[in-house]
Picture 1 (cartoon, one colour):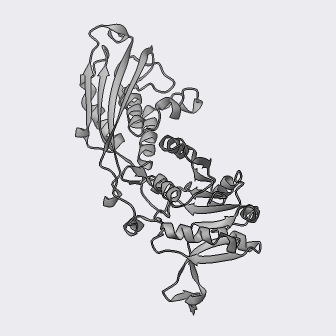
Picture 2: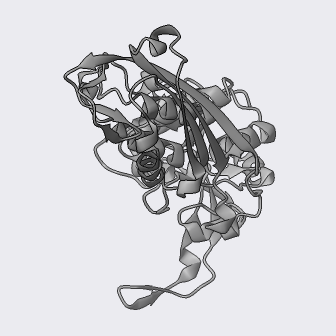
Picture 3: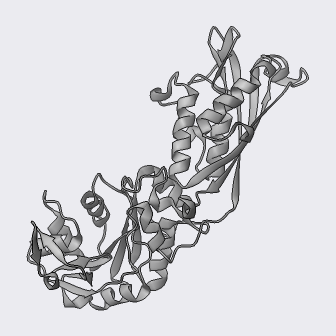
Length: 374
């Protein structure tokens, strides 16, 4: 179907899902949901191209999974996201679906494509089988339909229909509003949309996430600076010098952030919190760690354990080790026994041995969130 573009919408915040992870980042085996859906469509039909709409943070990570698709920044609403995606599309037809509708049968996709010449919008539907009331009065359920996605539209007509301030809940409503012909085809009960946690039990096409452990390594180095407070692992150290840095310079937390980002394939601390950005000038590294943890969890990962080696000739680390473990345990949301901190000197060698700064090495392990246990 070379004259058809597929748009997959996934820029929503998953507010009704009510978990720390965005539903598009739930994993089936080792594949996030958005990629599982894209690959299924790619196998089921031939598209001119496949466009995935998401947020800026997600697009960056998505690109590391696959360069086969085009990624577009979404908007504040479904309609705005769709309009952004439609802007550069020149194919005759466009098929639009939600990433959250992740178990669409291949024959349903085929039915929609085969009916493309029969209307301006081709829409899969389900019959209503229960009694319906409107304003406390029963209505004829034979006159009602449950609308599903994906929906196929004539591209030019859909662009025209969406060029308005009026908000539509789906593509067919927009097409119908300007007099377009809407053609219905059979949908499928298997094409259930993932909206709440309870919906996970209705999606038989999804496998449990892989039990694989992902490991990341981080290292950071900072020189000393006089007349500045020193923080290590979020704990204030009783000395009259701190670390020269754009932020508060907590070299241990910086190494830990890089380890967490490394395990998730999410880049490094300089990409997320650049020292050229004044928003991070003097900021507490604990705030950066909390934001990193939020990102890690939203992308479907669970923090397993962390291990850290602090190489310092000065200050002495031993008196603070348990406080450091307590603080990191609280920040990471894991038990204290899963936070290990080791300390060593440099045997008076190098800049660390000359008491000019501190080096920290960190390792972090992540696993995929097992949504089967939610």
